[in-house]
Length: 614
Image (cartoon, rainbow, N blue to C red):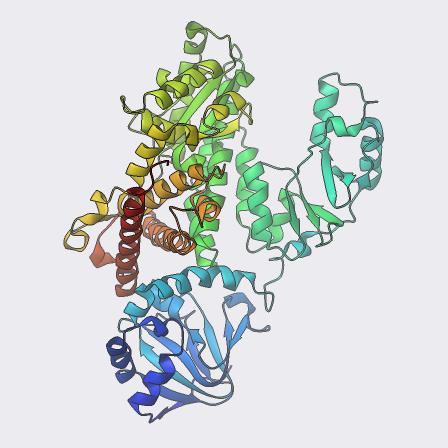
């Protein structure tokens, strides 16, 4: 492409101020701040084909706004010879990702015809991105970029991964008939038509398990099928489909069109060819590891994968979901490998529960591995104690792979977190009836956020106890008190040398989301899903829920970037950051984020005074 050719333009500050004031996110600035930005702006004209910005090869400290004309934008270095990812017209903003991160990240911007752009110093416009409107603007950027269909690299849509015509069978077909048709089609699955637009799924593995358990092969295939298999629509990103594979440990994801017609299926191996689903190969390597040493070695590659996904522009919430799914795979495989060395113990006798951030699928590089186990009813204390050495061994395997051991003893190696289903049920009822005693509320939060990843994936006995916490007003009031506690964020945060991103920003949002979702009767686990489920309730307005959703995404992005930097420096990942290590834009965004959280907590506390029947 041609090199940059530009000429300066003379424009009066008043005209420039009016124009910038009509563009997001600068329309959120106070008049004095806006005038100051305009006074330091540089207006330049570029000829057709000129490269205005190339943030792939150099760090930039400026943002650009299109005043007149159009600018083609490429966000993928490997696709610079193809169609642009987007085209910005008058008022369009570009270059802010590179300026915010301080990294040679993206994009490349090229003039389409004659173009006039406004060049703005990044540090000077930081208040615009620290505003509520700016925070939302930044939080949406990565996701919207990844959703664009124009110029998307090859194999980033699930459509590109579907290579075979699907096999559909009727529900009355026998297991033998299903196996025969699958062999004839050379496919490892068959979709079972349940109703118009609805399909079950039977796989090679399901048929093998049925045969191994001496199940008659003449019975209808519906008796062994998965009735609610993971599925995506055509046009979904390959990353979205991969997340479903990882989240459900699925062998296949069905792909349908918008009318519900089946178009095919994709398996984990299909994702290997996609540039945006690098986690697929690693997931398969973890799932098939034959020794503890191999498993640990494979998982140590995860931080590099997280870094790669961030660099590719995947939203932080999606990156964390992939990471959490890989942690699940690690734990499942560690359980299997360790238990195989203990043939006297029954691997199916217990259910492993991931708690805390792991349970919510929000595990990051610094997260502790909070966990518990629940045994089938009838096991004695002595029988449960026989499993403790194996649980200790599993914990050591996970630690050596790179996970952090919980220092508070939230582990199956602790007898308090290894009980039978009935014992867990009784304990939970005790916490709900006496919420002020010991750590009852903390334990309630742990179990409410719990998610079984091995064994009985339904675990109805434990889940039923917390099915409607609204029937326990004292516990709900205590959960609300935790949610609106502003003590962590109320101190002079910017005068301290360090800021704890988890305690001061993320944990308050997590607590609010948990309480709000429980109040609304929602079973959602992930924080952002809980916020969306509770939006519009009497204690959490739609606007406040949206704000917390945006802030959570922004702070998680800062947190991930910080932890990846620590890993690259050979440091242990942590949640504490020094304000001086943040860019001016990041520091402003973080300060505004904590301020937004505090304001919402204050509003909730005020509303709580007038709401008696929480």
